[in-house]
Amino acid sequence: MTMEENLRLEDLIAGSWTAAQPMAWFEGEWWTAGRIFRLVDENVKRLKEAGFSAGDRIVTMLANSPSF
Image 1 (cartoon, one colour):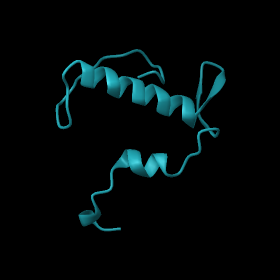
Image 2 (cartoon, rainbow, N blue to C red):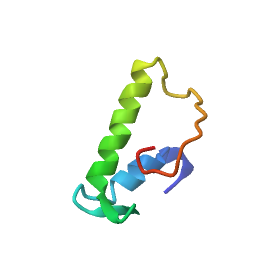
Image 3 (cartoon, helix red, strand yellow):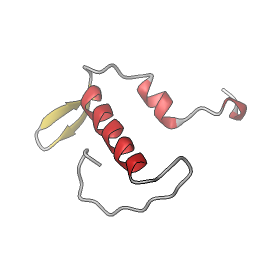
Image 4 (cartoon, one colour):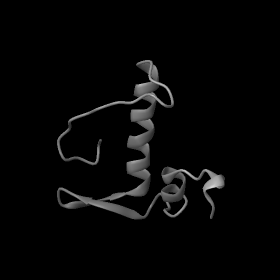
């Protein structure tokens, strides 16, 4: 793999998980990759609706949660 390929971290992560696979242990239960990816997609949609676009910088302070 070379730097010229411009691979993104989320592409590498998504390519190595199936939706049904457990991905994160949170508050006593396994969260599947599909559940986490759906949360990510929902947050991307909300940010776009709020006027953010690729390259914008966002700072957040959140509780420890896979929702964020």
